[in-house]
Image 1 (cartoon, rainbow, N blue to C red):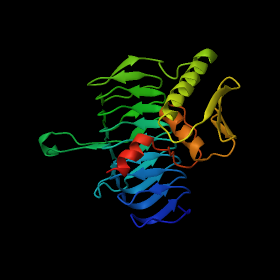
Image 2: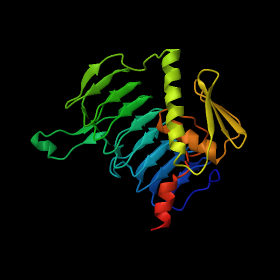
Image 3: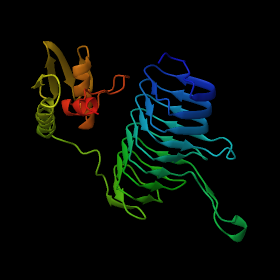
Length: 288
């Protein structure tokens, strides 16, 4: 997508769409102001309705709802870079909602900045307060985050939790209501040998996967924590410590980049991740 080109399914008074942005035809965006950074992919039945929506680079959203009530006034959400938000997640931004970088949000998660249903004149509550989620956070499936909550960086929230209090950085927390299970759990410092074993396991698993793909490749550990990937004498080096890539990516090395993403080692290039379909899948579709 060319920068500043606005797709027909974006209805906005002001829009800024970056390079290599993918927005599927099923997506619906209605905003006063929308900004989407380079390499972001928005697919499925995603609906975005709020006054201001700022989305950074290299995000992937699939069938999510971002919504601010038209009666709530200055509804605003700000989402950073390199985030993954999965199906049936609801992000309410009646008050300000901010999500940092490298945040993974699982399916059926609800994040609320507003709560009111029953008659306030009968003593029932009205709540409206911002939610701030730090960087390097994983909010797992079916979790609910209540208004006014702040989640610090490097936090994992366990499945089906109800987050009704602030969570400090580095914690593992879970439960209804949420409890801090372990402090200072993340990030965990790994030894060089532990990192090398992770890379060796990735190479071993991908070599098995290649048996299902319509191409072959050679892989080896290069310079301790890097991976050399060769197809038809074209060599690419993935530097796992620095997240840099040496060499020109093609469809085969893009397949490996996507595999590394699946294994939790993400190399971002402002282009969407893309893999080569396994032979069994393309055969099944062909025979349909």
